[in-house]
Structure formats: structure tokens, C-alpha cells
Image (cartoon, rainbow, N blue to C red; front, side, top):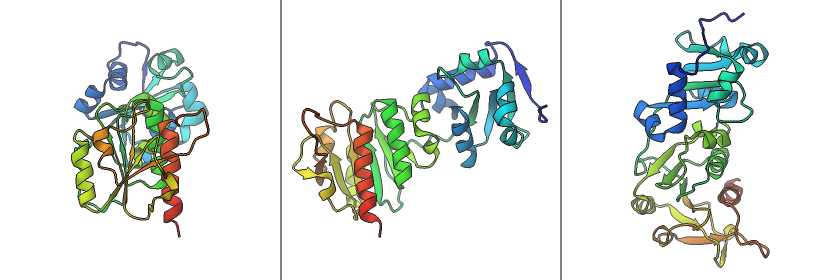
Length: 270
């Protein structure tokens, strides 16, 4: 049996369940309350590993008995542990076949318009990347290669919506992510600090591997359909493209970002 204090919830009208759903569905509510909704053991445990202690954890009895004992029993006693029926858990889940654990945690949304005064060597700027899968995969790749910070412009997918969080596989907590409402000002400030700006483009005479990425670099990745705005592209020191065989015209944003980021790492490794 479960050793810690817990409660059973059998009604979908429970206030904790309603709050979880609001956090899932509303970016404005997430930021207003300073909370985040996490679904799945990977996300919840990744948050724990970064010091984010949940306020509430939801799970089924079956999950506890099969996979959850070892870590759920180690949660601080202040964490509310809520047992749900499988049907009730499915009603709050954002996936068709949910892994039956979820959580609400306090979260500091550090959305700022400009870079802070630390030494950036690799910055990623996402211009209106709208697809949640692309956004999440880019964040996961950026964390894997050691990007210092990610900025995203207005019109991008919210990095903290359920689909993006799921695609990051927990990497969302490993790299700073900030909204920039003045991306042109941001780029100019980063250039002033000595970073070169490299923009991914569909058509360019410069292949992505021909740039010297050993210098501190800002990588610009654009919208899946329209690419990078002309205003931002005009600030680029280099516009680079990925060679493609006909009739393919472009790669998706996540693949393009991964190829260029790993070229950066290839050049920088001894």
C-alpha cells in the first residue's frame, strides 16, 4: 500500500483537475499563476531532477503499483498525491494512450525581450516556428548540443503547451527559453557583443557547412512556410542553405536546425 498521505478523487469537477486542464489549455493562465502542467513520468521526473518539486501529482493506482513506487514514495510530504481512476486520468490527459502520471508545479516563466549579460557562444533564435512538434524537437536538439539560450518570437508555438513539452522529452528544463517581442533589437545587441548571425535560408550560395562556427554564433531558424522575416534576415552575416535533391524544396524546421547545430558542434570539438 501507499505509505504517504494521498487522496482519492472520483469527480471530474474536482478543483485540482480543473486547474490542471486550465494550465494545459491556456498560456495566459500558466503565466498568470506561475504554474506548469506536466504529463508523463519523463517530464515529471525531469522537472524533479532540475529542482522543480510538484505541488500536486496525479496518478492511477495501477501506475503506482507497477512503476511509481520507487520515486513517488520519495516525494516530499508537502506534495499532494491524488489517486485517479484510469477513466478519470484519461479525461485530463492530452494523449490518446497516456502514461498515468501527471503533475502541477510552480514555474518561473522568465520571458524577457533581451539577452542578459553573460557570455553567449551559441544562441538559437526561432522566428515564428508554429508547429509544436518542430518547436519541441528543436528544444530537445538544442539542449543536446549545449545551446546557451533559445529565443522565440511572437507567433511561435508556446514552448510550454502539452504537445511541445512532450516533444522535448524533458529537455525543456535543460536550456533557458525566452520570448523576444523585439527580435531585431535582440539581434543587434548580440552582434554588438561580438556574435555572428547565421540565418537558415531555402536558397543561398553558401552551404551550411562552409561557415566558421567556431566564432560565437546566433543561429536563426524561420517559419515552416515563410522562413525568416526579411527584417531579421537582413541582419544576418551569413545566409546558409542545405543542399536538396529535386523535387524536394525544403526540410522542416527541426531537421534544418539539427543539421546546422551539429555542424557547429563538429567544428568546435577538438
